[in-house]
Amino acid sequence: MCVFGRPIRDFIPILPGRYKPHDTWRDTLSKREEALRHRHMKVAEKLCEHTKQLPPLTLTIGVRIQNQIGANSLQWDKTGQVIEVRQFNQYVIQVDGSGRDTLRNRKFIRKYEPVKKYPKRLSIDTYLKLLATQIKPVFHESSSKGKKKSSVV
Image (cartoon, rainbow, N blue to C red; front, side, top):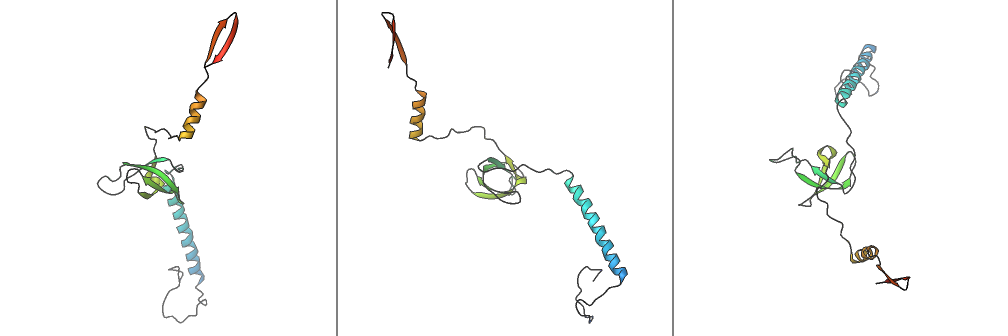
């Protein structure tokens, strides 16, 4: 049991919980676990040495998606918008053109700023309010008998 690290299925007639291995086996088990812990920590440090945390993305931001399958794999040829942010760096992206929703890890997504931005569409009400604020009254000055009069046209 100490060698394999788990209960063994065999035909030795020992009741569960009654098995007491020798002290040398228990000592060997603890030393092996310590060596494994040390080795795993060294590997984890080595793997984390050249990594960086990518900044999170927000909703409705434009992104480029890395193509993962097909003839053009590993190319950043698709664009879309983030429509949902999930746990563990997962994002749901709505692909431009087809409109499909795809799930991607943050590693395969890049922030993308489109070259041409379309102006926001205005409704009639907001357009008329905008026009009303832009129109300024024009004053004409006429001088008759030395007095200045202003009239609004």
